[in-house]
Image 1: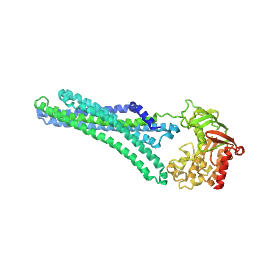
Image 2: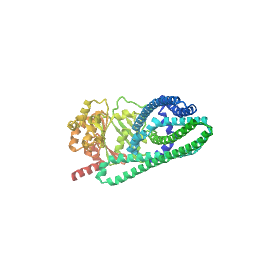
Image 3: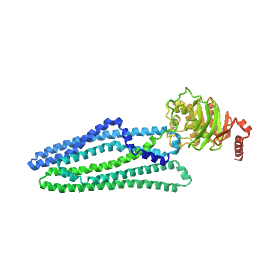
Image 4: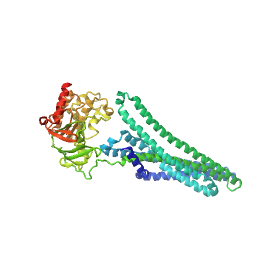
Amino acid sequence: MSKLTEDTLESDYKGSALLKLLSYMKPYLGWFILCLVFILALTGFDLYRPVLIGDAIDLFESEGNYDVIVETAVKYTIVLVFGFIFNISQTWLLQKTGQKIILSIRRELYVHIQSLSSRYFDLTPVGKLVTRVTNDVEALNEMYSGILVRLFRNIVKITGLAAIMLLLDWRLALISFVLLPVVVVLTVIFRRIARETYRLSRTRLTDLNTFLSENISGMRIIQIFGREKRKFEEFDNKSYKLYKAYYREMMVFAIFRPLIYLLSVVSLMIVLGVGSQEVLGSVISIGTLYIFAQYIQSFFDPIQELAEQFSTLQSSIASAEKIFTILNEEPLVKEAEEPVMLPQIKGRIEFSHVWFAYDNENYVLRDVSFVIEPGQKVAFVGATGAGKSSILNLIGRYYDIQKGNIYIDGVDIRQLSKKQLRSAIGQMQQDVFIFEGTVESNIRLYNEDITPEEVKKAAEYVNASHFIEKLPHGYSEPVSERGSTFSAGERQLLSFARTLAHKPSILVMDEATANIDTETELLIQEALEKLMEGRTTIMVAHRLSTIQHADCIMVMHKGKIREQGTHQELLAQGGIYKKLYELQIHHEISA
C-alpha cells in the first residue's frame, strides 16, 4: 500500500476510530459498569473529605470540643479504607479487562493479515506490519486500562466540585471559575497539537522499524559490499527524526502542564484573597474557605488530567487509525460464498485464454491456454520474465487473473475452497524459508495429523535423513531463524521433506534443485521419480538437463506459449527450445 493511500485511509478513520475502539468493549461491558460504580464511590469520597474536615473546623471553632476531632479522624479513616479497597478493585478489573481486549485485537489483526493476498505483502514492508501488531496495538492498552474510566471520573469530579462550590457560595464559586475559559482554550489547542504530534511519532517509529527489519535481514549483503557507514547514516537520520518527534511530543506536554498549574495557583490566590475578606466580614466561615481552597486545588487537577488523558487518547486513536487501515484492507483473492469441495483433487489443470498482470496493466501472461492431465509431468522453460513462475502462482490462486479461466479437475479455481486447493499443491521453491523451532516442526509445520513416523519417512524419501540423523538431537534439533545454521542444500532437502509429508496431489517445482549440488541432486532424483508417480507435476527449470524426461515441455516467451512438445520433438522443430539447449551445451563445454 502506498503512503498516499494509507494517509487517505487514516483521514477517513479520523471520526470513527474511537467508535470502533469502543466496540471492542461490548463483551466486557458489565466489568466496565462495575468499574464506573467504583469510580462514583471514589469520587464521592474525594468530595466528602474536604467537607468532613471543613465541618469539623467550624464545630471546633464554635464549640471547642476535642471529641469532634476524634470523631472526624475516625470517619476520615473509614473513608480512606473504603477508598483503598475500591481503588484496588477498580485497578485490577481495568488492567485485566484492558489486557483481554488488547489480546483480542492482536489476534484479530494477525488473523486478518494471514488472510490478505500475496500482492499486499509484495507492496507492504514487513517492518510496518510488525509495528502495527506490536507497538500500535500496545498503544491502545492505556486507553482500555485507564483512560476511558479516568475520563469519566474526572468529568464527574469536575461536575461535582462545581455543583458543591455553587451551593456553598455561588459568588465565590463564580470568582473561582473566572480563569476557566482560558483553561478550555488551552485544552482545545493542546488536543489539536497533541494529535498531530502523536501521529507523527507513530509514523516515524514505523519508518525506523521498517528500516531495521530490512537491513538486519540483509546485513550480510551490507557487510559484503562494505556499506556499513552509509547504512548507519540512513539509520541515524531516521533515528534522529524519531527523536525529534518524541521531543516535540514531550515539549507539548511540558508547556501545557505548567500553564494549567500556574492558572490553578492564580485561581487559588484569587479565592484566598476574596474569601479572606468574606471570612473577616462574617459572610462565610473558616471551614467554608478551607473547603473552597481544597476544591480549587482539586478542581484544576482533573482538568489537567483530562487534557493529558485526551493526549493519550489521541495517541491511541492515532495508533488505531493505522491498525484499521490494515483491518480495512480486503483480500484481493476472495473465497467464494459457497466454495466447491471436491471429494479428491486428482490434478487435471487447464488454462483457458488466461491474461494476467500483477498491477492490472502490464500483462506478464497473454492469452495462455494449455491442459495438463492428471499424473502428467510438464515443464516450463524460457527466459527470465517470460511468465513461468507466474503460472505456478496462479495454479495455487495466490493471485487472480484478469481474463480467462483456470480449471482444476474441471472446476474454476475461483469456485474452489482455497484451503483445499492449496493443501493439494506441494510447492518446492528455490528460495526456501525455514522457521524457528525444530527440524520436525519445520517438516510438519505444526500439522498434528502428520505423525513423527511420517516425518521420518518423508525425510528418508529425499535423503534428508542422512544429515538430520547426524545432528546432536536429530529431528528435535533446534533450528535458528531462517535455518542459518544449515547449508543451502540442506534447507532445500528440508523443504522437500516438508512437501512430501503433506501428501500433495499436485507437485510444483520452481528451480527446486538450483541450490543442490550435483551429487545431492542425483541422490534425490530416484526419490523424486517415486514421488511424481501418479501425481501431476509442474516444473520450472533453467537447466534443461533436469527436465528432458518430462511428458511435455512448454516454451514461454514474452508471456505466451511459443512451443510445446517432448524434448526430442522440440529439438526437431529447431525453434526457441533448440537455441536454448545449444546455448547451454556450449556453455557447459566452455566451462
